Structures are given as structure tokens and as C-alpha cells.
Image (tube, rainbow, N blue to C red; front, side, top):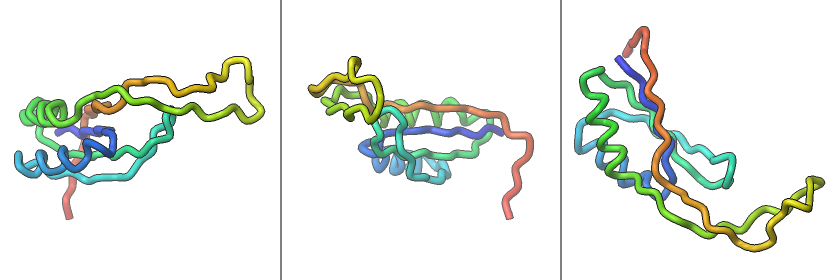
Length: 109
């Protein structure tokens, strides 16, 4: 048994949720916030049998694309103003960050 934690951008959340249901994966969705861009994310928690892990990873990969986005930087508050960039910068967002963890026990009540 494995536990998959998949952190995806909110923009990909509904598409991934629908795809997981279509492929008969049960998932719990949690609202989360990224630390770097301070943007909305969704964290999916999926408990799954070992033999179905690769299929779940394929579904996640197929439904969470990375994209480039212009981001306005946050001004430094009491920090070093020398490293502050006052204009929007292009960064890669989206995709998925996925952790696959072993599960020692699983109970469903």
C-alpha cells in the first residue's frame, strides 16, 4: 500500500479530480498555498495499492501541465532591497509535485 501526495496548481485541480474519478481512484482534496509564489494549490491525498501506483502517476502527469506565467514580485519588507526586482518576471508554474510514501497500516471505518 502507498500514499500519494500530489501538490498541483489550482488551475489543474478540477481536471485532475475528474480524471481520478474516471479511473476509479479515491482522493481527498485539500486547499494549500505555495510558499514561493504564495499562489493557490490543491493537495491530493490518494491511498492506493502498490500495483496501481504507476497508473495514478500517469493520470497526474497527463492532467497537470506546467506553463510560463508573469509574476509581480513582492517588495521586501525590512529585507535586502538590493536583490529586489521591481518588474514582473516569467516563472514556470503548474505541473505537479508528487510524493509516494509507504503505508505501514491502512484502516477504513
